[in-house]
Amino acid sequence: MNRLSGKGWLLLPFLLFLFSGKVCGQLPIHDLGKKFLLLRDTTTWKQIASIPLLFPAHHPQGMVKIGTNFYLSSVEVLDRAAGEGIGHLFEFDASGKLLADLKLGEGPMYHPGGIDFDREAIWVPVAEYRPDSRSVVYKVDPATLATTEVFRFADHIGGIVHDFVSHKLHGINWGSRHFYQWALGAGDKVLTQLSPEKLRVANPTYYIDYQDCHYIGNHRMLCGGLKNYRNGDSVFRLGGLEMVDLLTHRVIHQIPVQLWSPSGRPMTQNPFWLESTEEGIRGYFVPDDNQATMYVYEAKLPVADGR
Image 1 (tube, one colour):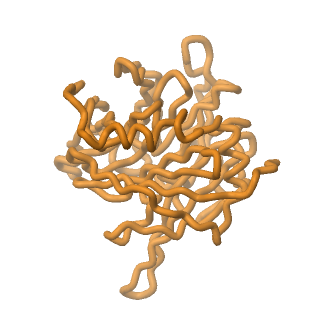
Image 2 (tube, one colour; image 1 turned 90 degrees about the vertical axis):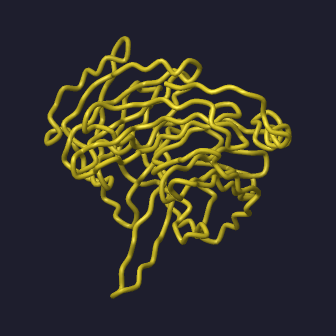
C-alpha cells in the first residue's frame, strides 16, 4: 500500500464544495432508491463536471464515494495469457489527485471487480481474469486501508454487495450471468459453504451485463453495465442501470443510460456511483481506461413517492 500526501490544488476548495454531501444535500441511500424508481429513458442527464484522473487508472472496475474521496478498483494487466497482473484499489480526491494505491490479489487472482461500501468497510472481490475461475474476497478499512481476507470461492466474482441489514453478501460472476448469496456470521465469517453449482441463481435479464453494483437499502442493489450489439461490422454500445431485489434476484426497475464518453464507450462501461441530492440524482462515471476521466452528471426529478 502506498499512501500519498501533499497540498491540494487551487481548484480543490471548489470541488470540495461541489461534491460535499453536506453542501449539496446528499441524502440517505433509501432516498436514492425512491428516486431511482422515477428515472425514465427520457430523463435528461446534465453533465456538470469532467475531472481527469491524475494517475494511470489502468482498467477501472468499481467505485464508491466516501465523504469527499473516491475509491476505485482497477486491473493492471502485465501478461494476461500468463495470468500476470496487479489488482489496485485507488483512493483519490475530488480533483482527481491520487491519495493511495492499495495492491490486492494473489498470483493469477489479480482482477478486482465491482465494489461496495457498507458504512464500515469496502468489499472487493479479486478474481482470475477469465470466467469459471477463482476469487478471493477482501474487506478494506477506508481510513487505514487495512485489508482482511474474508473468503475464497471457486468462480470468477465480478462484483459484490453487502446487505448489512440481513448480513448477507451478494455476488455476480463473469458477465453477471449468475447471482450468489452468502450468509455472514460473527466477525463476517462466511456461513454458506455450498459449491458454485448448488449456490448460483440465474440472472434472468440479458440486455446489459453488470459491471459494478451497490447496496441501497431495503434489500436492493443498483447495478450498472453495458452490452455491445453487433450488426455485421457495426457495433452499438448500450449502457444501463438496474435496481435488483436481493430477496428474489429479480429486476425492479431498469433504464438505458444514453450517455457516452468521447471514446464512444457508455458511461456505465465500468465504475459508477449514484447519490441522492435535493433535486434528484447525481452520477459519477469512469468509462475509459488508463488516462481516464471521471464524468459527473445530474438528473433533476419530481418529488419521489417511492414504492
